[in-house]
Image (cartoon, rainbow, N blue to C red; front, side, top):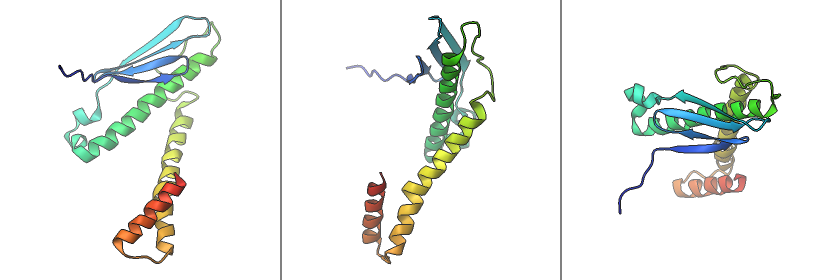
Length: 149
């Protein structure tokens, strides 16, 4: 059977869809008047432009951040399109729109809270138990993480 792997992915946005291929990102949304607005842009991953970001462990973090950035931009575009009046056209190239800085701040706070709740807090609670042995420490830590999840 031939390999049917496709390097194309996407996500749902408000009244539309965002699709990403290795070289482009396209977002299509339905406007309040029923027409479809499509925004396309070129995309080259930073892991392809700089060798250091293509290393195995680093590449995963880079892909995560790039995917979050692209997804948030697509959601912001679709949110602006969903609330516009029929005479307005969504602005495809805005860098800091009404959702730009706020959305970036929200993502940063979300990462920080996730780190604190699912990594730092379980470690500190396990440390308070006084257990120092590797296996038992990890089991207790894992139990705390499961409780929080």
